[in-house]
Image (cartoon, rainbow, N blue to C red):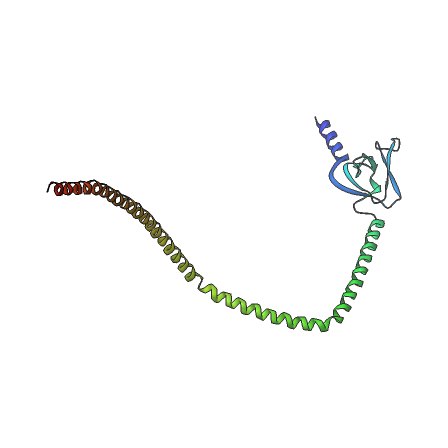
Length: 222
């Protein structure tokens, strides 16, 4: 049992896991990624200096590390050929690129400063114009504040007017209904009057001829 524990401890001491750890190819032209831990294994590919590699496993006894290249290929490389940071060549290239960017930015800033000096005269005029505009906006803001102070009173008045309008509309609707009822009643009354006049005319038309006939008969008998 003790021998098993010692063996496991030895294995754990020799093989260390370094998941998600990144190492870089050292400042050599290129190194070989092999299929196994030794030169007897075939070369999978050559890695140029500065290539970032993900370390998957470290074998301190054999001085090899299992790594994964940016394209996903996995293999073994010598530990001493790996660095914890980018190569000096890459750092120098980045520094030179940064220096070029700073020099370009410096030239742009100098050109902008020259333009600002040329535009100083017009800037004073624009500043005066902006000050006038600021004063105008301030006055307008004060006017809006004074107007806003009576906003509640205006809102209450509007609500009262709306209530009165609604009341007038209800009264108007009631009057319209009453007028329509009166019109209907008047029409019926006129109809009855007309019918009565016609009936009275018919009665008179029947009675008058008889009266005349009776008078004529009386005269004839005389």
